[in-house]
Length: 114
Image (cartoon, rainbow, N blue to C red; front, side, top):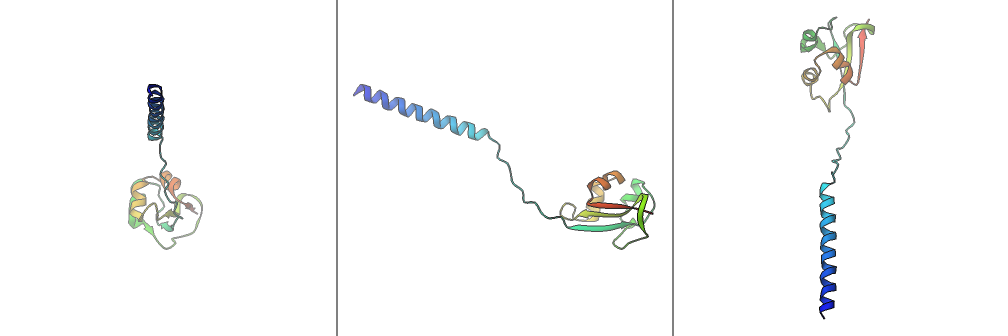
């Protein structure tokens, strides 16, 4: 009887130890949060000035929803398309991207003035 009790105690101890190890290891594993990928909602705006000055770029009055001049090869921004899922408004886009380089890097597409 004493030998049977010892076997049961050992079995329960091993089971408890295994359960603790499993829960401990499982608690340290990082669970990846899956975020749904939204299709981009492109919004195209046109820069009406010929400047790469950050102050001029940040002025919303210098941007239009209608084309302003011909776009082509040049050094000043002409047309910029940003993702409305990421930036709710033009103001949000400009606040997040304060220079011409940042605007180019974080837009869906862009072109320059001729």
